[in-house]
Length: 71
Image (cartoon, rainbow, N blue to C red):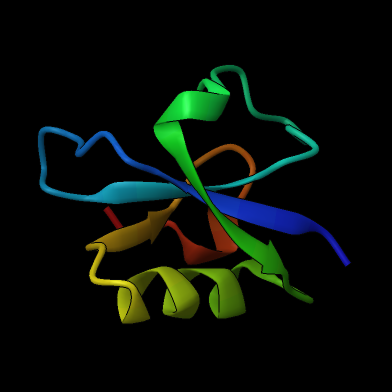
């Protein structure tokens, strides 16, 4: 199971991107000081839901969590 994190920086559209920590296909991983660990999840859907429960307007990264990328 991959480990995920949510980027603390809010994107221009208001989203906080959820990424895989292994950086699979992701060209711009967040710095460690700029992320909140979401733990292990079987897929990005669980990770995005975990971030939303924490209060983030979460959305999957286009590159490493594309199945959860909506905007």
